[in-house]
Length: 109
Image (tube, rainbow, N blue to C red; front, side, top):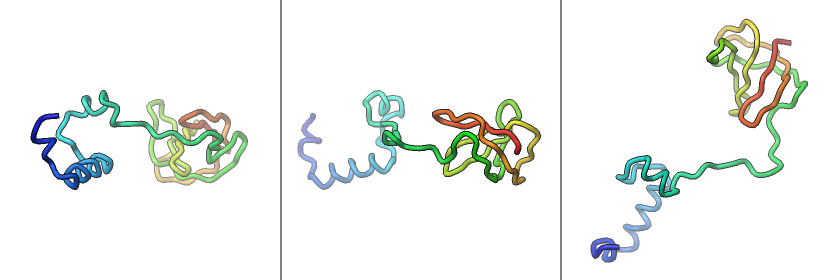
């Protein structure tokens, strides 16, 4: 710690900490921030259940297309890839066939 940092009032240091927590730039490149461990991934607590289960039939709106042309929908932020012919912006009834850590796959019901 150099002399300037040692002489900073506590409230300035608290403000910098609050800015970092708010996701505002700290003046360091992102790679440095990540290496320093400041960027931490947030994980759902153990026992967290997905918003859908295998076999669920639900109605969703297709928000986009995946790389392979599958429809992409979200339920409470959880991504669902839909096999079959779908159009962006249209509502479809789907059946969930597989649940993954980050996404689910479904087919048209």
